Image 1 (cartoon, rainbow, N blue to C red):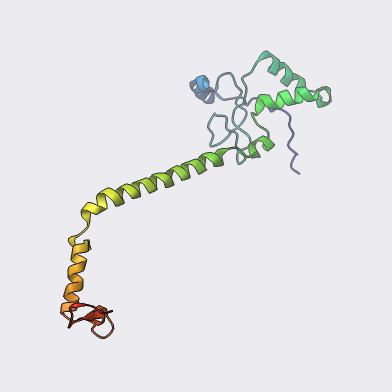
Image 2: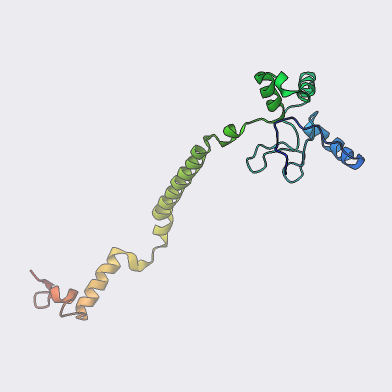
Length: 177
């Protein structure tokens, strides 16, 4: 049967000589904090994440008060007060599970980016429509050319039964009334 996990603080992992050199290399980054596990991808860093709940290093650096509290926790936990248990927990972790799961304001930032991008897209569209696309229109899109096309279709008597030519009076050279 597997032993149940407890909230008891884990003792720092004794490191072999090669690992000690690695710790000394990264010591400026992790400071005076204990390496207590493998963490996320084996990196000696602290990350609060629900998928990797046990970071490789403790949250706070070791102080005389925290070391005394950890020695006291090695004994019977009934001797610890609630404040001492909370201080012990906060020494190892920055947030509780409920704090990690709590909603934050990230959705507001994402929504602001979406609205900003839509606004920018509208402004670019209006600029292109008013300044760039007008200069690129072919000559067949002008009103004068459309009038010439109507005159040409009437002169050729195109769709004389039901089309545009059916509404033209060829005897008076004017539109039928």
